[in-house]
Image 1: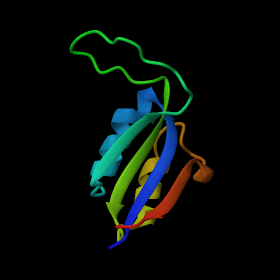
Image 2: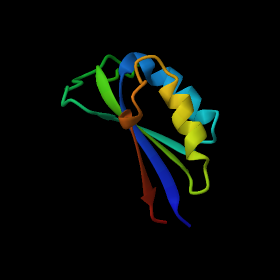
Image 3: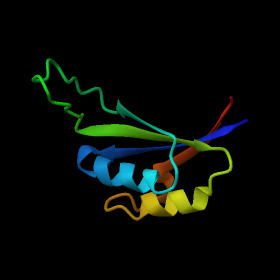
Length: 92
């Protein structure tokens, strides 16, 4: 079985909206990574700080409707460029 992964670079202010858009389309896993080499050192207890700009990846079943997911993400403010999204196949 193949999986489909979408990735995009977004500012931390859009993370919650992007996660919600992915969840509404059946995302199986979401990964957040630093996209600009900004260190997050010694966060306070009970906090989960995010980098100012990050790479968001969403993993889906291989038969996901990529157009629907792409349109939902491109509808977020500041993500209007189609080249902001990248899809790739992930082997089982």
